[in-house]
Amino acid sequence: MADKQAVLRQVEFLQERIGEFYQDLGALKLLISDLVEENRQLSVENAHLRDRARMYTEEHVPAPGEAAHYLGQLYDDGFHICNVNYGSLRQGDCLFCLQSLQRT
Image (cartoon, rainbow, N blue to C red; front, top):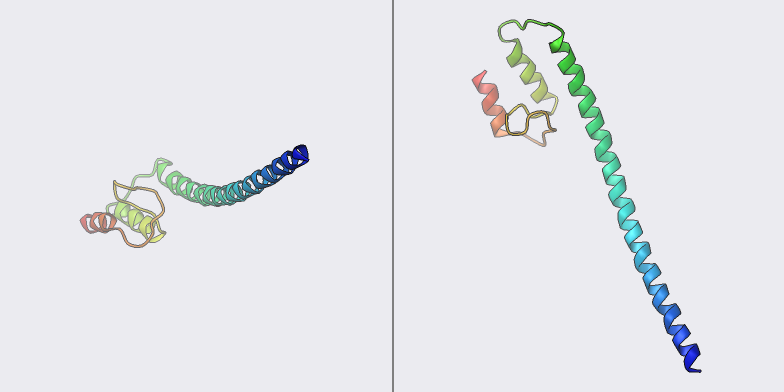
């Protein structure tokens, strides 16, 4: 009888561990989903920035005020133009970026 009790306790213990593993697996699945979405957004952002950079690196001599216009477009497109976070996605207004725009 004691052996049956021990086996039953072991099965219950394993069942609890399987439940914990299942919860951990669910949490990892959500994390991976978030990382995949972040990667997709960063890939789009990176492609957008490369296209913009390519436009201005093909031996293009900027006209006066063109750089300021370019920075303004980047800011309007939702990217930081300040030296603190340059090129990263912007959530709302950034005082550093706005200050940079006023200087140009």
